[in-house]
Each structure stands twice: as structure tokens, then as C-alpha cells.
Image 1 (tube, rainbow, N blue to C red):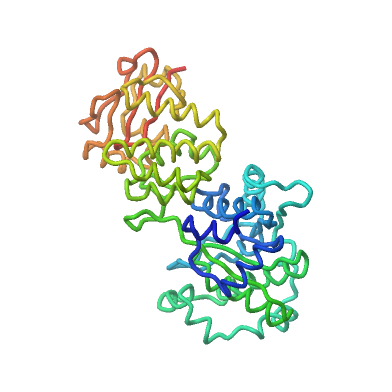
Image 2: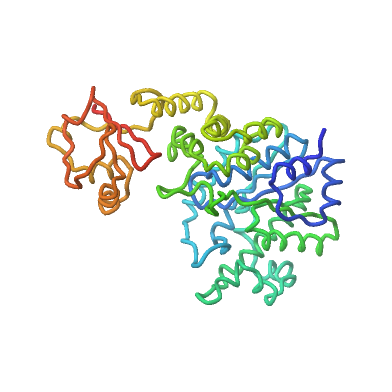
Amino acid sequence: MANVFDILQERGYIEQVTYEDELRELLGKESVTFYIGFDATADSLTLGHFLQIMVMMHMQRAGHRPIALIGGGTTMVGDPSGRTDMRKLLTKEEIDYNASRFKEQFSRFLDFSDGKALMVNNADWLLDLNFLDFMREVGVHFSVNRMLTFDCYKNRMERGLTFFEFSYMLMQSYDFLKLYRDYGCKLQVGGSDQWSNILGGYELVRKLEGDKVYAMTFKLLQTASGTKMGKTAEGTIWLDPEKTPPYELYQYLRNTDDRDVETFLKLLTFLPLDEIEKLASLEGAEINKAKEVLAFEVTKMIHGEEEAIKAEKASKALFAGAKEEGSIPFTELDKSIFEEGIGILNLLKDVGLTKSNSEGRRLVEQGGITIDDKKVKDVGKIITLEDFQDGKMLIRKGKKVYHQVRIK
């Protein structure tokens, strides 16, 4: 069996590693317990998180043991990495709810039977820490001068950085120490934006335990244009089907930039590399076949094969001009609303296509709203029963977002 380190490297995941040769040798000769931390800042994981989940699945398939660490404690502070201001503070109840949702989603991707994977919450040890004991054991090993050279803190110096946030690195580092002591965890992995935080834990364990542990980061999921994949003008792409329906996930991936197809097939699917190479070599309109494979494979992993098939049918129906097939997202509204008539701006907002009337106005004025293949030109348009065909109406926002309105 191939060394999982080589698999991750060949598929383009790895960004930085400590003691690369040593870690590769370790992963090739024994089962290694490793962890990735996920702060519970929302009630669903995102497509960006899915790349990290893929790493965990690759590692587990190779016989290693993943720990999915839910940051119920660290979320109480909030990671300052990549932030220009302090994160919004969530209540403990909000964090606990988000953590429970994460647990449900992880169970779809990892095998937790017989201890093959673990799921733990750092709230279990961080919330009841004694401050002085913690600072005497952990704080003494961190240099303030050095921490201020890290981007996660340096970028905040002009706008202000609270000691509250400054403590985040110490707590994340303590997580590694705790997991090493309790579960023999020898490796922390995460996104490249976490390198400073991960190094903190790696160095802490080596200092206090005198053992060899390792750190590895992988590339963030970005498009060729430099934008974060999974972030759109309409918002985040979530793994929760209630927040991002399977069809919208499929359609988002189906519209991947030609330049990104090969990269995303390597990072977000388990397709063999030779098959990916063939798909990536397609040119012109043929590259759309590769995009359909990408969209189907990822949707299938996240939402199941049945939902992926429905999304694929819906997408092909729309491209062929059909309007009533597949699992296009829809909203049912009472018939009385359209007997009286409702303004297009209010309708867009009510079905969740826009967040405000001003956003809807801008879209209409820019030609970005279409109803049943007819572009809406009047921001004052009133939608009535006459606008429906067989009780249904298909609204298209921009080129990629479809939503059906049905009368009940």
C-alpha cells in the first residue's frame, strides 16, 4: 500500500511539514493518531472544511486514527488568524448547538466504530482551567516578542489586539498537549493559515514531553483567480442541505473555472490520478464533462448518490431548457399572495435570493433576474397569478442560481 504521505503530496494537499522525512517514515510503518481542530463558529461545516475532511479520510483509509476536535472552548475566544477585527462572541448555548451539528456531519465521512476515529470537544478541558496553573505550565513557554512576529497577530497591531485574543494560540497549543497525553496524538494538521498556531502546539509538546511530534499544513481551497473556494457573492457553500441544497452545491461545482478542474478533482474526490489526468486533458466544450464528474462525485460524497443523481438531472434539464425536472430548490407560497400581487423585490427577498430590496433593485437594474427565460426589466414589477405556468415559476439569479416558486 502506498504511503499516505506520498498520496497527499501527489494530489497537492501538502503545504508545510516539520521533519518531512521522519514523518513520512512514521506514517509508513505504524498507525498514527492525528488531529484537526474545527471551531464551532457556525451551525454547519463548509466546502472549505471538506478539504480538511478529505485529508482525514485519506489518512483513515491508510490505517491512521483521526481525532476530530470540536473547538467548543477555543470558539469562546475566536481565532484572530486572517481577521482585521475581533470575532463576534457567541454564547455557550450557540457554541454547544453548533458543535452538535458538526458531530452529525463528521459521522457521515469518518468511521467512528471501535475507536477507529475519535471526536472530542476542547470545552471539556479548557472551560475549567485554573488560570495561574495554566500560565505556569503553558504560558511560560511562549515568547510575546516571537508571537508578535506571526501574521495572525502582526496584522492586527494597528487596529488593536486584545489579550483575550492573544491567548488563543496558547489554548490551541494546549489542545495538542492534552491530546498527546490522553490519546498518544503525534500529529496536528490544518490549513496553511494555521501554521503559527500549529507550531505553537508542536513546540509545546516537544518541550514538555520530550517526544517527537509533528505538524503539517495543507493548501487552502482557492480558485485560480485567488478567491476562497466555497465563498460566493450569494454567501458560503455549506455542507448542510438545508443551508445549501444539493442542487446548488452541484451547480456551484459544475461552474468551476476550467483552470481549477484538475486541482479540485485531486483535492475533493478519490478518483485515481490517471483518470483525473484524462479528464483534465479535455479541451473546449469537452471540459464540461470533467466538471460534471467533479460536481457529481463531491455531491455524492456530501449528500449521497440519490441526491447527486437528482441534482445532475436538474442541471442537465436546465441546460436543455426544461424547467420542471430534478431537485431545483423551491419555495411554496400561498396563492392569496399572488391574487393580491407582490413586488418582484419583495418576492426575491422572501424566497431568499436577496437579503434586501436594495440588492434586488441592483440585480434587476443590471439585468441579473430572469423569470421563465424572460429578463425582468422593471424594478416595480408586480408578480401575479398570470406569471405562473401550471402553478410554478422559475427565477434565475445571474447565470448560476435557480429557484422555483410554487403556489400552494
